[in-house]
Image (cartoon, rainbow, N blue to C red; front, side, top):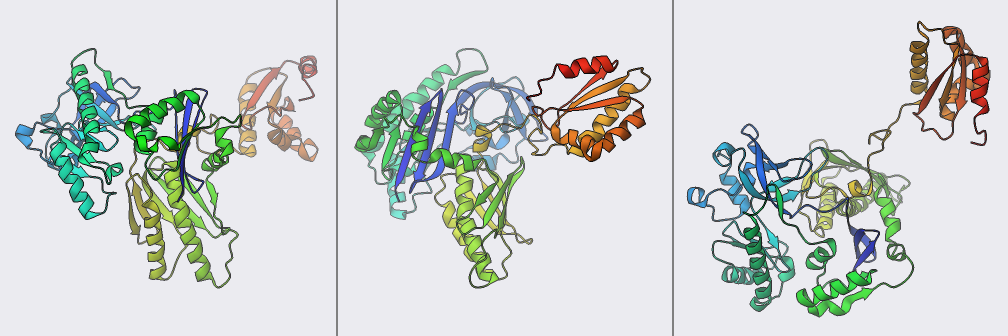
Length: 511
């Protein structure tokens, strides 16, 4: 499998695309409005402690206060003896009241775990993690571990022994997937860098106003080289000479053996257009995704969960219904994994595959789905079929969905995807006219509406408009405005025929 990383830098925005066999599988966007918060470390102040929720709100200087759950608090080791992972520490916190750990007004150092999503503020933790090229430093826990993506038992054991040997006293260390095959000597620069970084953060901890930023994770290109640019990547292509040179300097330090794979894109053509990425991005924002065999999936995402529906569409098969259903579901499973990864969908995911009668077919679909998600760097858990025949799975929610960065809610429908029908708008206008004419001596009104709404009054020789005039005992003139949104309405009270004619003469009839 060929891998490319394509970097587009323009207009104050950086976009990074990961291609596998020339197919877009991951997309990251960062700019002034979409700046990443995950990984940032803040000195904040506890504003509210909620024993009923076993959580607290922390002011870290953002628009919304951050949310700190009791399980994400690193308590005093002398009391609670945390010797293992943050997750194990969290288990020991379950029966501890949060009021026994932190107080309102207390200053506290926290790191962002999850981006603010919707109405929710960022989720934070006191378990600090500092990622390097090969290692992740855990300054607040005493633990040594190896990435689960390294499955070879002998390699895991070898790397864990190195981690235990190299880690600082009373600190933790996790060996990253990129460390596979590396030696003790390879880890030394990484370890020294991370220790220096933690020392700098500690120095800032007690200086300055609260809340304040103590550490900001590196920019998108730096993180791309650190986290994505591995030996299995064939090319790293950048369209900015400045960022290209910066990337070479960084790679010289982190992975000098991969330096010759970096290319500067010098064509006048857009780099994303050249590699066909722009067209793929257009598809990402669509709810319907077509499968190669003619079937399709529908992706509906809400704040609570994401629902994916599978349909046969144009695919009719060649053998029988059972075979058609199985082939569609198998292809859908692979595409669902691709779309979830690409769109960065997190949280609860429910998949409605086409009904299958045979248990062996359901298991085949589950196996393909699980196998497809093995490529995903974000933790996923495919639970299986529910009693209703739906597949239930979860994916760790860290960032906002990709579509949240590419799109914003419609100002007219507020993100519902629905607007009032023409008949509803018509009925609303008639009520507004009735209220306006009530107990008044106004001669009539000019109603400006979208052409589709105007048509309801003017079609069939204007019978509906005649009836409205008789009901209200007033003169009503309807003007279609093609520039109006479907729900836009403007009602102008008119004193008499002369005023109406004067208003009508002012219109641009070329509209």
